[in-house]
Length: 259
Image (cartoon, rainbow, N blue to C red):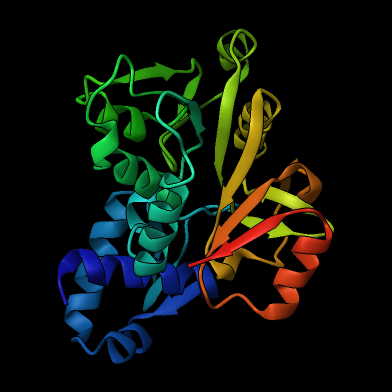
């Protein structure tokens, strides 16, 4: 196991449990206790966790795993979902992309579509995600519009009232949302209220709304509401979604695409 993969596994265990002992982590990851101690020390230096005697605890009261450590979670599902979402976008459209690992994969899927290799522009991409703008800015056929705001290091997203000036002046054909949770009753939600506010604005400016979310996020609740389930036109998820869950979303007027 590489160091990056080991760090990701450690952080995911820590987020899940709140506290992790060296010996327990060493057993679960099948590495030596000395390796885990070194990993904990290095992660503590980056303020990713707080070192304790014999282990580590999560950093701070409200802990969110940074985007760079989320990329391998449900990776194959996210890539299938991203390809399907990209297929729902027509050449020449204005597309809003929120931040997140799944929407980053959507941006990559759009970038390799052969029918979007040229155009003036082939697509207009509006995003508050610095990493997505950075990846797509090298594609001259794409017009990239980046909202203003203050960057959140956890997600690379720009948030805050500075984005209102841009989003208040545009209209979108489609908004693609990456969410922490999507529930028929409680709607789409994010962990951070500032991110949710920007995502909500993108939805309001769009003709149609697509949620790209793997099945682990369905039927879940999160702190900050983005929009009602009825505001979502299409949900693209993976085939692990239950039939009952599909039925409930369809009854709420959401088209469900499972890939």
